[in-house]
Image (cartoon, rainbow, N blue to C red):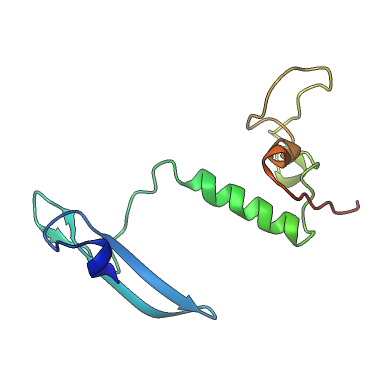
Length: 117
């Protein structure tokens, strides 16, 4: 599979793994992690996530919502120890930001689940 995704083992590449019930059942790396030094990619290669963690966070929020463990209308301050996240005032024109309630994500969902408090 990786040979189709990464045709040349001498260029940039990727690592992939498949898990089943919490155990890695297949892993491989193909291509170069560093083109200057020629260091190859292996299943143990660590990659910089850059700004990709936002997608994983959004996915986790929506999974919890779908399991009725989190309501998208709940303020983020309910989920922090320090309460740093505060919802804007109701008459505010502030758009979705990191300080908005979780409900700001709801506009992007076709189905929103809510947990009774």
